[in-house]
View 1 (cartoon, rainbow, N blue to C red):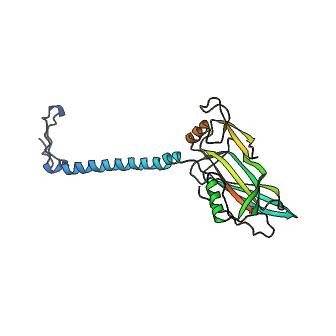
View 2 (view 1 turned 120 degrees about the vertical axis):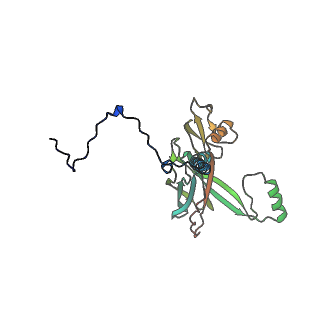
Amino acid sequence: MQTPPSPADPPSFPQQPYADRPPQRIVVSPSAAPPRRSSARVVRDIVQAFALIVAAMWGAYTFIYREIVIPARRPAALVVTPTLEAIGRRGDTVLARATFQIVNRSDTKVYAPAIWYAVRGLKLEPVATDDSTYLRQNRENAQLPYATTRFSQFTAVEVIGLGKVNSEVEYWFEPQQEQRVEQILYIPADRYDAAQLQVQYLIAKDVHEVKEIRWRTTDEGDLEPRLVFAAESPYAGAAAALSDTVPRYVRWLRANQGGVSYVTATMSLWRGAPAAAPAPQPAP
């Protein structure tokens, strides 16, 4: 006698191996298929990607040009501000102080292998020149390096002090770096009316081809530095004077964005003369 199946038990079906089962087809409704992008959207995505690439390239170009190319092409610049002032007096002898304020206001490293100065005593005398004579003198002296004045003339321009602020080839200033140098000297106030300080400096962006600086004095008593280039340098040869007439030296200056400049400061030696005002800060 068989026991009837319990209503709680699920009906059993014969199991069929997976290999013997017929293939089943899965029908996907059209709403489940991935949507196709329209042509307008594809074009818009391509344009946006191209715009991003162009913007990135322009930004990189602008940065490289402004931060690398332009500074590399800009000439070397150094601001040197001299001051000459009396800090003491004993009879007719003035104790003077020459100050050199040096600053690199550019955005690149600047070498200054030679910085030198001269102090000159100036003596003047009054003259009275009529109009026609003064105009004639101006025409005759038009090619001369010094100025002409109507009511005074120099009777003495003499070197009374020389010095070097720097004479080392490997001497440089980083951007915004400053340095202050001072020198003192006696000046006879009974011999001159004024004293003038002139500082000259050679600057460049690269000095690796310069071996040393040699110094000599000119017939006027001024210091003159001369460049000696390394043997493997294309500028090697006899020592090149700092003059525009030496082609080898001029080519080196152009190749290294260099130059020579000078600036002056003057002090009165008269008793009771007002103190000199601070020198203005020149632009680089």
